[in-house]
Image (cartoon, rainbow, N blue to C red; front, side, top):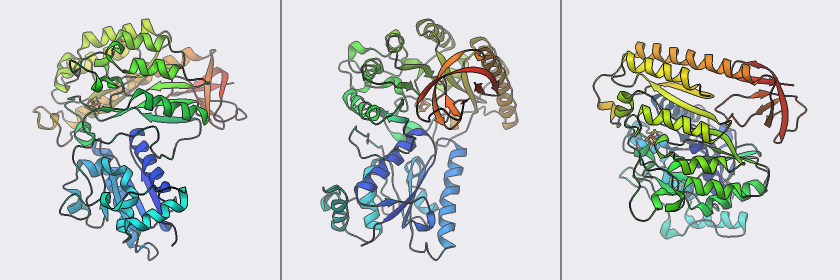
Amino acid sequence: MSQTKVGLVSLGCAKNLIDSEIMIGHLHAAGMTMTPAPDEADVLIINTCSFIDMAKKESIASVHEAVDGREGSTRRAKQKIIVAGCMAQRFAQELPNLMPDVDAFIGLDQLTQVAPIIDRLMGRNAEVGMQNAKSVNGKDSSIPNSQFPTPNSADQRSFVTAKPVYIPDYDTPRFRLTPKHFAYIKIAEGCNHPCSFCIIPKIRGQHRSRTQESVVKEAEDLVKNGVKEINLISQDTTYFGMDKWEGQRPNPRSGVDSSRGESLASLIRALNNIEGDFWIRLLYTHPAHWSDDLIQAIAESPKVARYVDIPLQHISDHMLKLMKRETDGAYIRDLIKRMRAGIPDLAIRTTFIVGFPNETEDDFNELIEFINEFKFERAGVFNYSREDGTRAHKMEGHVHHGTRKRRRDAAMLALQARAKEFNKLQVGKTMRVLVESPGVARTYMDAPEIDGTVFVDKKLPVGEFADVTIHDWRGYDLVAK
Ligand code: SF4
């Protein structure tokens, strides 16, 4: 029997990318092959995003494109289309009716079952899947008939289960889609925060952390395989380990505290002890959990990049309260000062939301003053997106889209002025960079796919560190000699 060829379109953020990597790992283990050409695929998986309206529209367009492509091609007539990821999870009830041409919907708990679900769609039984798996791995990586995935609703195409609980481990089959020199590690999944604008906890479920040992093992393997930058990700990286603490349950405001059990601080210290020349980067930290223990752990761990991603969303007490961010303006101002004092050369990346319901001109002006005063090295601003199923969706006082746009444009101008000022100050400095592709590199202040780049000599080897001197800048990017 010929091997099943699978195409996969991965949309959305790095967390979704890891889910795609896990699916591909399991497809390979089951003896299936991947193809970049939709025309050649027996099965096409679209791993969707559904964080905000724009992402949802992109996901729907990708599914329609797949369905239209199949209809317009005799070669693809028997192709199966699977919708996976956040959109399938979020709209588990609605999608089967809205998308009659899709062959299966799978959620977050089905990532590791993607191969047997494909076997089922192709009209094969688990035994055939098992034979294929044996022929590739020399061991049985398929699942027994008793655990063969069955649809989870009256609609036989939907396998999605509510309230996902899955979390990967260090030995989870995974095929990395990032370049050889950088990788993401998902240290936890889900979120316990009540942010009123966000649908993620409803999609991805309650926070669940991996063990520190599992994360360290994965990092050790990555470093052995030549990875130079490890990006730690989850919905709330600062809550790592806290869900397993014994005694009093931590709440959405509890600080990172290694004396209570595994935490981001203890994880950082353990990762810092891994031999090798590499950076660790912290993404998606929540301000409410920052503590002196965490600041100290970063300060004393030279392998942790002096870069922190900490979405603040706003600074006005009025907005932070309505957003249910568990923080207020005084706390945030004090925290940023403590972070800068405790971690010299720290580059802070943050994001803000403007146009949240009931945002006044005073709230907005306070935000602009804050941006100008605290001079973040990296920052972005988003227009509030009204999402079904969130607390904010039901609020009174939604801001007119014209006002939202005007405020976003004004906030962007303030941030651009700061970026220009900051980049000018970098001229003349010698910096360590990681070469991303011929002639393009990133400093410790630049997370992959998010921040700026440094234009460097094309002869510098890709995937290696290099020291360069900055002699100019262009927009958000730097130019090195
Ligand atoms: S911390 Fe808030 S914004 Fe981030 S995923 Fe959790 S609920 Fe959403």
